[in-house]
Image (cartoon, rainbow, N blue to C red; front, side, top):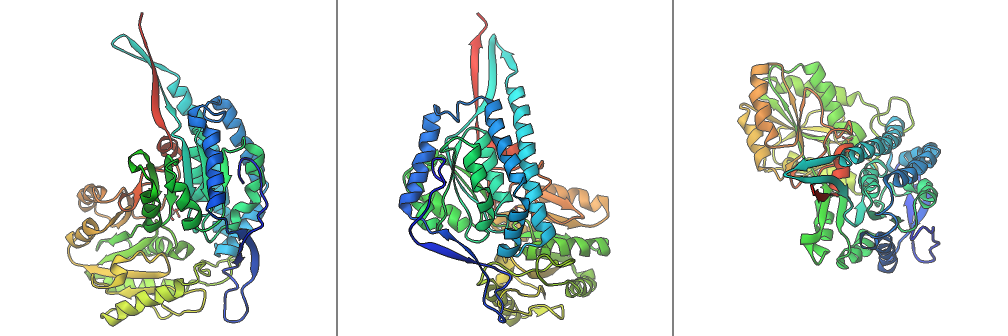
Length: 482
Ligand code: G3H
């Protein structure tokens, strides 16, 4: 989608296969193909966004708030009619369960509707005059320019839109490059994009990041780099900008969110939350619990019950009722997970649960690995998949020190009952991460809450409220009282 036009492509295409059917028994189902565009098309999309922004003087950045909202409302109306198609692509391509795929779609619609409301409130607030020392001021928020958006494969619609929607509604123009996996889920919406927004406001280009996004960054014409995914891609793109001081970054990157289980924790609740936290969408969430610290006095009980509960989980196709574990979209993930487990085993750890580590070409049955130590890869690497390192501790300073030394700082889950212990601990933890979840697993939502992280985990903040602010700058008009 370039300059409002859905273009045909006569060059090379990348075939897209289903995650689900990538098994030993039958050859993977062919789902379709997407253009492998080159730098030339990427730069055409950039030009289109640059022209539509036109140094802040274009139709879109100068448009009345109510008119921009009308475009967004038209888009969301069209989007709602595509629910079944998008949900099907999510299940077939990335193996997301039916309830989670439906949730991803509905959450996105809700995100757009609520962002529109937030934008109206923000505009009403901004229109109020403030007065100080004889100066009347009207403080509002204005766009930043051209935004390059790259979303992740685990939420190809929802997280991509959590960047694109606030960017667009604030008056920026954008180039969007869909992720490598989950690339088809966006396709049912292409006509709605083309029909709802003026030419050049949203441009969508398929292809490899290095070939399409890299040359776009090299021009220095991107004002905001918005990326949810891995820090290697984020930093590589950021480094390609010739004038990094002028580039705003909005990133949500890796995390290694810990669960810390204190001796007095309610184990039924803790295990239920840890299952959800470590394994929803097979652990392929940046907010997933990726390491569990358990007090040594309850470690054996926890491991036994946690392992048994995991072994009772059902693996299957995303649309099967009760299925929580589904195939993994990244073809090399099963080998990677197996490598992490073998590394830990070779250094003295064990797999606690009977089914843990069973592997096929498209999945690994979740493995609980204990005791994990700092010389193991599982201690440091963001596994983003179904393997759970468990670390016993005797003193709370141990997990806190690990967190302080970690490169990440997104969230933590703290399980315990005694308010006198929890209170000071919460104060310490909020200085290490950005969200402390009490007796509950880590998550991004509800989307009204700020979503961010310290250190390498994030740059900028996302949410219905913060997204609009991350993609804009405060401006004001001042008039003297004369
Ligand atoms: O991949 C990271 C996502 O932001 C996780 O979002 O907590 O809503 O699953 P979630």
